[in-house]
Length: 136
Image 1: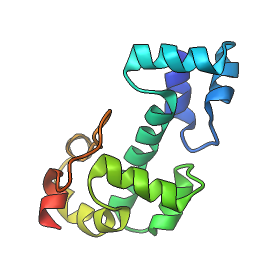
Image 2 (image 1 turned 90 degrees about the vertical axis):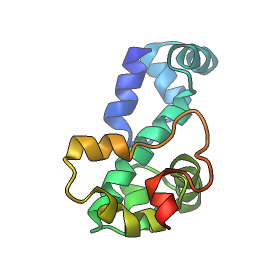
Image 3 (image 1 turned 120 degrees about the horizontal axis):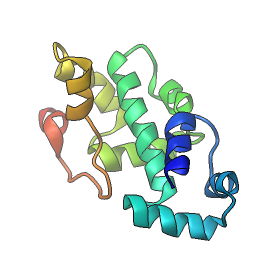
């Protein structure tokens, strides 16, 4: 399962699906999903989307790309799905995050900013959660 997780971490921006990941480790997609969830507490798809949203947060904080450009840069093919998942994990929309994100981490070292701005995993972010949402 670590090989699958490592591949997701490395190739998050590529088109990945459970079937392709399962072929990579020579097991069925159903078995991969069950084993991955048992090992890491979430499905392979959920883990992939979390990686994509984490990278998107970094790109949005830079502020030089539009939300649409960030969506495609992290491997999402649907702006609607990207925005919905981003809002579920972060608690605010990508466009609001882009406007507020740079101000929230200004002056923080990158490693601290990454940890402070990490998306919520395994559950939806509560409405108004986090320092960004409370300032919106």
